[in-house]
Length: 635
Image 1 (cartoon, rainbow, N blue to C red):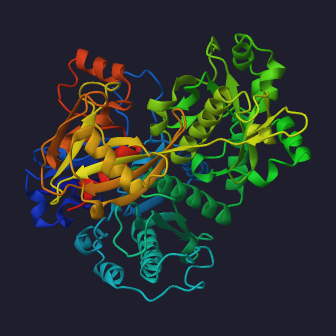
Image 2: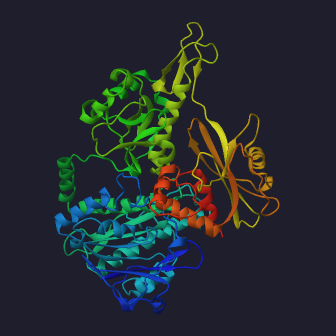
Image 3: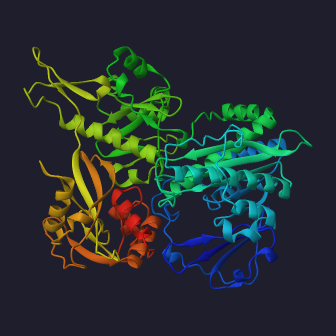
C-alpha cells in the first residue's frame, strides 16, 4: 500500500509534496492535521479509504496548466498514459519484471503516468515523491542511512561516478553545474537503495529542477537527472544500469515535468534492453505490427537549416521525400491539430495516399500539384532530420472524412496550448503564409514575385535587375505594469477579447524608437500611467505572426504606487489594478477552461453554469501569461 499527501501552505502556490509511503505509521505526526491534507490511499489495483481525514486542499491557490477534461472543446484530451509509459508497462509485463520509483521534481507524474496504463498493477507496487529531501526522511523506506546520504552535498561527480552514461558537462555557472552534479549522486543513491528495499527488478530515481524559478545562480531552464538501478543477471548485484541528464530550453514547470517523466520511462526501457535484449526486439516488433513509428515530441526540435535553402539539388530531394512532414495551414489562421498539444504532421506519403487527406485536397479549388509545388520549407525536424514543410490550403478546404481524429483550429487562440516545438512550427508556418499572401509584387519595381529558396525568399521577375525580399517581423512591446511594491498588476481588456479576459498592455515600437521608450509611451497613451524607466526589465520574446509581430516582453513599475488609470477608449475597453490573490484565481480558472482567447469557450462555460467568475488572464503559452506567472511567483 502507498499513500500520497499534499500539504497546503498559507502562501499562494507554495505547495509541498511529502511522498508515497509504505505504511501509515511511518508518517510524521503533523500529517494527522485534517485541515491540511488531501489523502489518496492506493493498493496495487484499487483505491482504499484512508484514515478519517477531511479532504480539504486550498485548490483555489494552485494553478494548473492542463486543459480541463470538462472543457467544451470536443477534442481529444491529453492522457497520462503516454507512449513511453505504455511501452514500458508492456515490456515489464512481457518479461514478468517489476519496478519502483522515487521522484522529486516530477512530483508524482512518473508514478501516475505508469499507473494510468492498464495492467500496470502487475509490474508496479508503489513509490515515493520526495520533493523536500530534508523533510522526507520518514518516507524513504524507513532508511535513515539513505536519508543521511541524500542530505550530504556530494563532491563533484566524475565520468566514472556516473557510469559513463550521464552527460554532466554544461555551459551553466559553476554553482548550477554543482547543483546538477549533486542530483547525479542523489538519484544514484536513491535508485540503488529503492531497488534493494522494494525487491524489484528495476528502480527509477529522478531529481532536478523544473522552474519557473531556479535557486542556483546561472540556471535559466529546467533539467532532471534519471538513474535506473537493477541487476544485469538474476542473482547479480544491484547496480546502476543507466543514468542521464535531461535538459530543456525553458522554465515551464508542467511541460518540463511531462518531458522528464517520459524521459525516465524511456531510459528504464533502454536499461531493460541491456539486461534482456529480447525486450528491445519485442518492442520493435510491437511498433511494426501497430504501425507506430512516431518519434516522441520531446525528441524533436526544428533545425531551420537555412544553409540548405539555396542548394537546389538538396531542396529538390527534400520536396520529393516520402517521409517529409507537413504542417497543414488552412487560410491564414488555422492549422491541422492532432491533439490540443500537438500538431498533425502527415508525411508526403500520407498526403498523396491517405483517403481523408486526398479528399481534403480535392475540396480546394487549386490543382494538387500546384499546392505541393508551393510548399514552404520550414527546416528539418528532430534527430531523424526529416524535412518539414508548410502546406497552404485555401479557406474552403474541408476535412470531410476522419483523418486520425485530427481537426483544424484557430492558430492565434490554440497554438499557445501546443508544446513549445509544435508551437514554433505552427507560428512559423503561419508567418510564411501571411507573408506570401501580402507580398505578391516587388515594392521596388512593381514586378510580380516568385518564391525561391524553399519559399522563404521572394524574387521579383524584373529581367535586368531582380530584387530579393525576405519576411519581416514588426517589433511590439508587451509589458506587465506593477506598483513599486509589486503587490498589484495593471491588466487591460482589448475590444476583441471576452469582457472578463484581461491582459498586459501592448503596442508597436515606432520607427527609430527603443523598446524602453515604447514601453513608457504606450503605457502612458493607453492607460495614462507614468512608468519609472529605470525599472523596465526585459523578460522574454515571442513570435506573434498575426500578421507579423514579434512581441518583446517587459516588466515595469510605476513612479507613484497605484496611479489612477485613464484609458484611451480607441485602444482598450477597460483597465484595472488587481492584487495577487485575484490574479491567482483568474489564472487557475483560465487553465481549467483552456483556449480562453476564444469568446465561445468562456460563453459556453457561463451558459452551463460552470464558471461565474469576473476575471480571466490569457492561457499559458502566451507571453502575457508568462509575465503574469513570473510576477505571481515573486515574493
